[in-house]
Length: 71
Image (cartoon, rainbow, N blue to C red; front, top):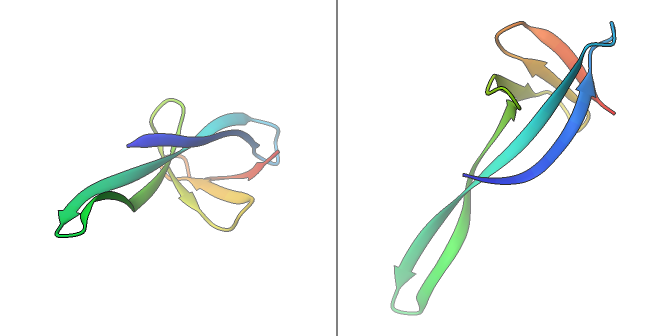
């Protein structure tokens, strides 16, 4: 997995998290040659907690069920 974005997000109470977006790339080869194609994306906190994306600015920390917004 490759890190492609990192940003700060806050709860309504002001607690801050660093959210990291990782992208998986799949290497393929066929008669036309080789290429890397985009695979799965995954959001995690900087400490490794799983994050669900609700919309482009709103996320949920799975372990704590906290809703955070991108700042």
